[in-house]
Structure formats: C-alpha cells, structure tokens
Amino acid sequence: MSIIRKREQEKAAFKNKIAETELKALRSQMNPHFIFNAINSVQYFITNNDPVSSQKYLAKFAKLIRYVVDNSKPGTIPLNTELEAINLYLELESLRFENRFTYSVVVDESVDVENTQIPSMIIQPYVENSIWHGLMHKKEKGSIEIILEKKDTVLKCIIRDNGIGREQSKEINLANNKTLKKSIGMANTKERLDIINQMNNGGVSVIVTDILDSDNKVTGTCVELNIPM
Image (cartoon, rainbow, N blue to C red; front, side, top):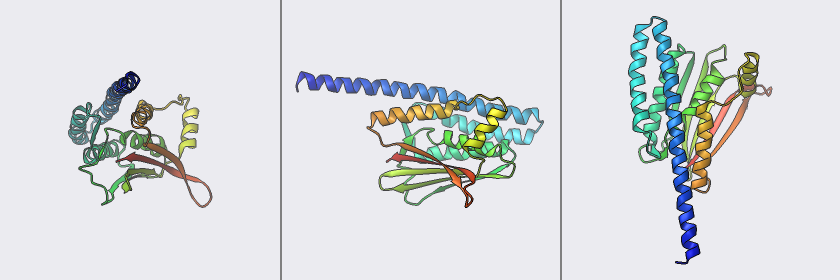
C-alpha cells in the first residue's frame, strides 16, 4: 500500500470519527430539549388540578424517558423502536392538547419494522413541528398522518397534517413578536442529516411541500423523509 493511499485512508477515518462525535453531541442536545417539553406538559396537568390526566401522562412520560435514555448512544435503532416512541409522543401531545387533533401511523406491509435500522429520533422532530406550527394555531380539529412505505431500497416516511401551513405560521409568529427561528430539534435534525449524508456519500433527503386545495389554498403541510435501507 502506498504512503499516499494510506494517508488518504487515515484522513477518511479521521473525518468519520469527527462526524460520529458531532452526531453524538447533537443527540445529547436533542434529548434535553425533548425532555424539557414533556416536563412542561406534566406541569400543565398538575397546575390545572387534573390528577387523573397527570397520572396517565406521567406513566407514558416515564416510558418515553426510558426510550430516550436507552437510545441516546446507538447511531441507529430498529424502526419498530422509533415507532413505539412516536406513538407515545403523539399520545402525550394529544392528552396535553385535550384531543384537539387526531393522528394515525400507517406502516405498509412491505416495511420490515424489526430489521430496518434508522437514526434514532429522526422522525419525531418533524412530527413535533407539524403539531406545534401547523395544528396548534388551527381553530378546527386538526389531524396528522404518518405513512411509512418501502420504495426499492429506500424507506419513505410521509408526515402529513391539515394545519395552517408554513407561511401563515410565520405570520402568526411575527404578529406575536416571536423570533422566527427553528426549534432545537429541527435545527439539529437537519445538521444530523447533513453529517449522515457526508459520512455515507448522500442518500437521506427531506422534501417539504404545501398541501393545496382546488382553489390553490394551503390546507396543510407534507414532509417526505427518504432514508436508504
């Protein structure tokens, strides 16, 4: 093996090591962010003197914390583990917002949830974004749908809501004098995807589009997350 080739291999290995370290750092930032939001929900039930809901929420919250702790170190986890956490998260948010939205998680039979590996907490931030920025400003009851299907060697995850859309959400934030900045979860997710693509020469992609009706009016948002299997 030539000295130049050896140095190139060492350089590539060093870059991968740096990327892995960055991924771990990003995950360590996401976990407290996620836990902090959940604790706020527990506080909401307690301050509103709702002991029954508080107990239900705390039980589900404990399961979710266990997921965060157990999956904070592995680079990838089985898809079924991620789906369990997403379902728990949706249950918690539905409880917190007094069933102001409905949700469904549909997994196509072509997807092997036990043997498909994906980056941990890669789907949840998009679900969180749909709820907080799409559905919570909606006067009518909202809905969010998560669809997973296999297309050749790619896992396609579609997160679709009937919220107010991206532009109207921005306008509401401006009217309320809120700073227009991405949540920690979304910002870190984008950064993680960039690093994963760098390490694996691309592959993971995210497409965000507005859902329009026949009059070209925005009726929701669709996120398409493509993960190579």
